[in-house]
Image (cartoon, rainbow, N blue to C red; front, top):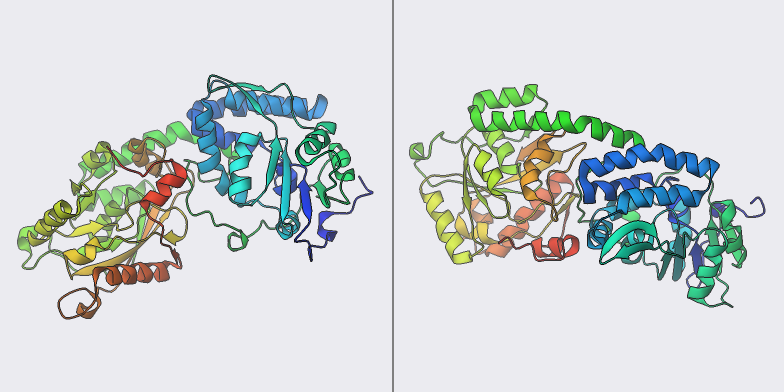
Length: 496
């Protein structure tokens, strides 16, 4: 191993026409030397807390096999526990929607520096099966060839075993590379991180090693070739064995706490609910100056206002309600009936029929109701703002932008592929869920699309989007609800 220099000594200049081969993802392309967190993410996504528990229980066995038997045996234990009896389409869905976020946050900077400089890229995944790695490697990092361990299936169901070719370890890596690139092919650069990679590295014109446990910062989000804007899955943190244990121990406590918090939201008046939730760890921070509103629609002399918010979770309107201290009305579309049932304020279900929805919301405004609207139409977890629908700008010239930031430490309270009825529970199961609600200045008449401003609704919508993004230091995008659901769920996000 000492005969090969470290990857930090590899020059990346003038490598555009070069072919690079990376010997593995774990410990080579990624900084982390353990594949457990990625199996844990899939296990929780396809099998919930029970499959994650079983995976954690067999993890010590896999470590013993790694040290005293073989790397192959250890990996096959994790594969069997994670995949046995799981529909292959669910594994593929998790690999596309869940894993890229965690892979991208752990890219090895030196390995990526070399790989990104080369036009032709090939990788052999060993510790992580190809089905878990290929979507990220090809779609986000631009790898041309992805070789790796193949899982065995029967009628679309994973058996938990690997195919007869086994794991691509040692000479199997070199054989697979010869088969993919040609027997006489000689890649320009080979990068590995273990003794079993020597045969593969020796095939290349130049060979480099990735040092174990590098004290390097991962590649920054701004330096990624393609940003991760949409991702799914319920877990916020990468589930190392310790984090996985904490999640499992907290789960029953968190579910009880969620039920208690939801009961408080539904049963107690606002003044008592605010302090009760604060005592139970649910906090809201209010910035800016909330407008003074009448407590009841009948007390309002003018029509209601529209609060225009960026969309973070199903609790956006609730935390606006807490911050204002008075009732609001929230149009909903894809929220489950459970969320509408527990809401302490009025909700109205919209149809996405523009004419019908416009008439309904205008009537509510004329009755003095204050409306909370999220023009993005769907939530976005990352620091991006999706394209705003312009409908709100056509409904009223009394518009108040509101910038929202949510904080969740253990579970995500949103999903594109899962059961939306559980969004409420997963958000409130977090140890200390919180929101920052920032009230911005109400739009002046010349900033709305009234008769004298000369602005159309699209200009107003884009302006409000920019104002909220600037306040939060987020980035505006032109992506829509359809883009998100096509990327994560393979549909248009229509709710039947």
